[in-house]
Structure formats: C-alpha cells, structure tokens
Image 1 (cartoon, rainbow, N blue to C red):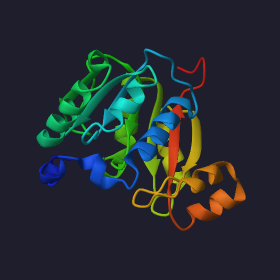
Image 2 (cartoon, helix red, strand yellow):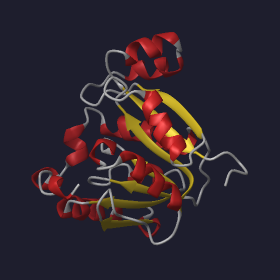
Image 3 (cartoon, rainbow, N blue to C red):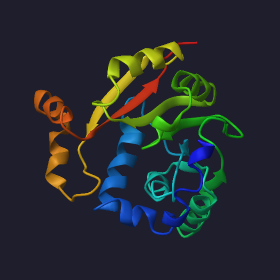
Image 4 (cartoon, one colour):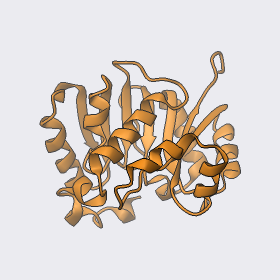
Length: 213
C-alpha cells in the first residue's frame, strides 16, 4: 500500500466530515456492527483499525467501552487521528500508529481487527487474511462491494486462512446521502439482497468457532 501513501495527505483535515453525508450516523452504525456482528465484543476489548484514516471510527468504539488502536500509512492521517482521539473522553484507551496494511502487526494480539474501504488495497488478500488471523483473537471485520467481489470467493479465502465462521450483514447507510430510513431494510432478507445487487456494501465478520485451533 506504500504507493498509495501521499494521495490522501491533503484530505486528512476533516476527512470524516467531508467523506460522509452524515458522519456520526455512518460511523456509529459501523461501530455498532463491529461490536455486535458475529462474535460479540466486550468492554475492554481492543479493536485494531487498519487504514483508519483520521480515526473517525475511534470515538464511537471508545464510547462502547472498547479500546482503540488506529493505523494508517499516511502521516497526515495519523496526525489527524491522534488529534481527534486526544480530544475524546477516553484518550488513554486509544493509540494511533503509522503502518502499512500489508505489513503492520500490533504489539500484542487484539480482540478485533477492522479494515474499512481498504481491503482492496491488500497486495495478497489470502495472505493478509492469514496474517490477520495470527493476531486477531475474536474476529476480523471489513466491508465489501459484493458486485465487485463474489462473497463465495472471499469466503473461500477466509476459510483458507483459518476463519471457519463468517457472518454478514448489509450496510445500508449511504456514504454521500442522508437516508436514515434505509437502515431498517438491512434485515429484510430478499429485499436486502435485491438492493445489494445495485449498490451498498456488505459487512463481513470472520471468526473461529469455539474450540477451533
């Protein structure tokens, strides 16, 4: 991902505010699914947010009693995230570092690893999944465009990396439009699947079943 470093430098300031039509609603719902999709996270669990941008997800995870570690390859994003997290109610529960998606490893295992709007940057997706499994105790959570990447292929990569439980949920909070009513359709079954054929993303939580090695 080093070739991407620098292209976001001029956008780091107020990144979340300008990237999303309703940043609080978008990031709060993302944090909700990080905590609840698949294996539940518990207060005190640490979430590693790879390609964290300006750390906008951090305050929402901290507000749920989680610890947060953000990592981004762009120094300007790391600086913006550090300033944002220092201003939260729980600055001691947060850390930010510079690091590459394909090479970074946390100083100690984390409960959850998240990768949003960035899984496409992994140079070798199966290798990334396998490496993430070595330091992720509960689950790996990321978003996916199902029209670009077949879920069956992603599932095969995850199983090959040792994740034997895969939970999915449509994510119907638009990035560029404030349409709060759409969120209620995430559990609508056939209608949700129909919407995913045309737009929106899929949240995936990959984990290991209890007792799995």
